[in-house]
Amino acid sequence: MLQKIPSLALLALLPALLLGPLGSRAEEMTIADTVVKLPLQEGVSMDDAVESMKLRANVLNFKLVAHQPLYKELEAMGVPSKRVEIFQFCDARIAHEMLSESLDFAAYLPCRITLIEDKDGQAWLVSMDLDRVIAIANLPPKLLANASKVRDAIREIMEAGASGDL
Image 1 (cartoon, rainbow, N blue to C red):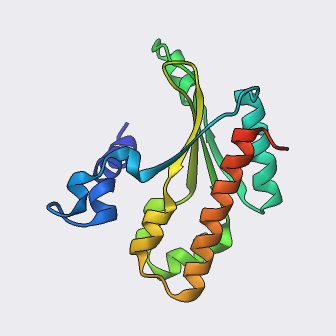
Image 2 (image 1 turned 90 degrees about the horizontal axis):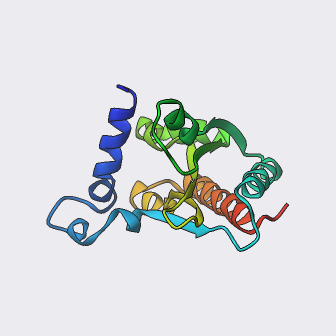
């Protein structure tokens, strides 16, 4: 439980971290403004989406470094839950370069994509909007190119999952 508290605190502060101090545009921002969401297309099952994401990540040389079926943990605790799974992907070389630039990037590693079913039964893929992080990171050109590569790969993995593209 102690491990989850810093993550929740970081999520609560994310709008301010991404847009600056209170009194700026952060007051106008909602948490929905900090994420990218893709609905699964009609006919694409959640299992199809998972397989498509794994296959696309492999093609892009991104490793699935962690998988957390949160809904199973909740059910084991007696808490009814719709399906929620967190997938963490990483390109270790790029991660190393980013961490060499600044330890602050550790808070953003690895890249997460959550598969979640909403209250109406619609399945979604949700991830942090890396464009917002890249915009404030003030990266040197090589790292900017790598950050853009990661952003593009995560989006491609999400798009493959949402469309069921193998």
